Image (cartoon, rainbow, N blue to C red; front, side):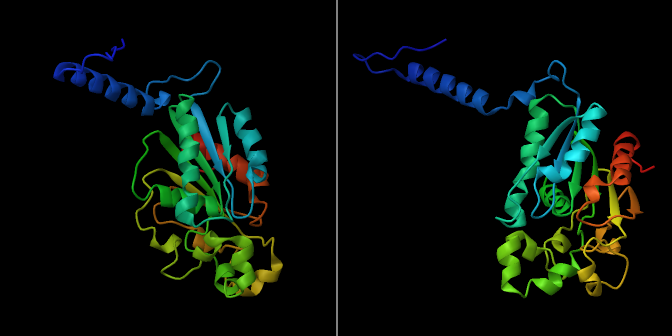
Length: 257
């Protein structure tokens, strides 16, 4: 229904009210996402997985995981984001973008797999909100208490220039972004840490088991539902067969195999 506006006679009070009411209704409908009433699209899965790569990587790093999840019937959003261009607080919008995609497809159960920095983006995003449709998270090699590599390298100007603002926020000190994310995740989270270094030149930065960039202890969270270590290095953990198998198991049972 549309209201005609006369050019010769001013609108009376009731007409103005009707026009304003109609305009407000149109505005409301335009900003409510279709996912608010959507059901899974024909041929689409009700389960959706969001993949978030790590620092200085792209969605290609998560392609093997994407294939494995798709084969299990998940609708997959392999979300890329410009990891070297902005601080963590700005990059966390990638989580929202992934959620919007899954919701727009009518997914009723959403799962998230992260690698490295991706895990910190998820923790940052969920500091001030809950999303009931997110049923589980698997973090691969997350620097949940920072990285010793960052502690040693950020004093060199080339490091920040090459790796971006987010990299400088990933130290192990109390004031680092990971260590200031105090609200526990209220979603079942499984964490996988690596014990074989893919970066042996950083070995002297660590005093305990590590994957070359993140120590086993740094990966842990008090609220984690399950935790595993695997003989894998940091860089290529998303391509590890064991990491992928454990991820699939966690999404079925909310526990690792």
